[in-house]
Length: 513
Image 1: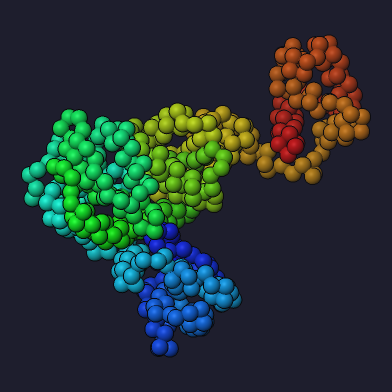
Image 2 (image 1 turned 90 degrees about the vertical axis):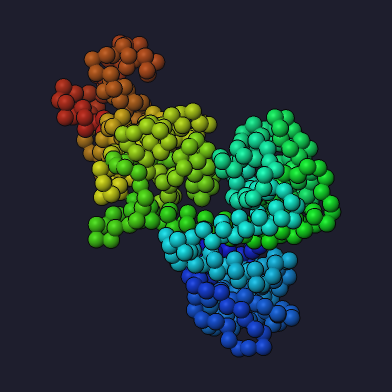
């Protein structure tokens, strides 16, 4: 299942923009091409494409018919989708309204959206997976190689190799390393970055020639691949020198076709990612043996870790940030999900290496200030994951408040802090009684600090000098105050039960203030 807004988000802003989000954001099961000459507007679950509309009046009529037919949403060309009357009609009908950027054919839109919808309907089915798109990318690489008569690689905007041409002997060591390693070698990236290649790729749509470089790097014709102004990737052809304008123009046409394939690949990957997050979220919330969830976890035992990021990130951004950090440091399949406003990770408890608690702990300690991680207890099986998650979230809150020492902590290292926290949060200060209630009233009425004095005395049992230093008092003054406290409230500080009860009550009052 995928909603209309999630479908558009998966494809990205290069082609689509959500103008109005409909009520309930209903599920999309197919796309339907609406003919303005026909009354039909699909059925519930259809995303309707407004083809051939003449003006805003036609668009408003289509929106109203789609709403009456319980369609999942309607896609219009940008100019029509932003007409005030059309927006008003969509808002009045609580129907999702999507704007399609100029320059994209409706046939391409249908191909792209149906591929993503199929992937969402069967995220684990090879037939609905990325294999078809990858095969098409390799075919495009071969087609581009035939145009330029040179070896070609297709890369995304992270310099990862998506496809490469076959049957070419003219190459260099850098290309061999790129194909074998499935990404451009770091030293080659450094060389291209120093020459400003990536800045040019990010800003321009025009093909350009990269001169020969050190260590046998041959010249390359580079063609940026963009959609709606967004840089998606590039075509790299190993050439022997300048290329004719005719060949360059044909490669630019191939880049336009490639852009749609890269959008579809990214969208399908996003759908698969969302599906994996949803399944892990379900398992972390409440595991049920009667309805097991298919989540590919590493060998147990595991720990659920609650992750915190520096200020300024919302939850989706935190999820993206942690996934990026994990992959950059070798965690190939990060097990991450957000639940109730917290980003959670499932890591191995007893192992080392990427994806383990030891690895994550070291990573967090070495990261920027504000990055924190709190690990719940070991989970021996899926049924233990919800309790480990609850412990991790509770501990993260204490780390963020400075009650527990961060930035990376396990529950076993903070058992005493958690015990006191749980006891304190169970107390109701509105019904406070005993000697502390008497001392609190006295402090309010007479502007004394007897509760603070009692807290220091209890925190340093048998050590009046240390208690006095914390209060910046002379020891004799502290003893005088304690005598006065005993006169105001009935205290039996030789009783360990009373001492513990007083400490918990004081901790509760301090927490609320």
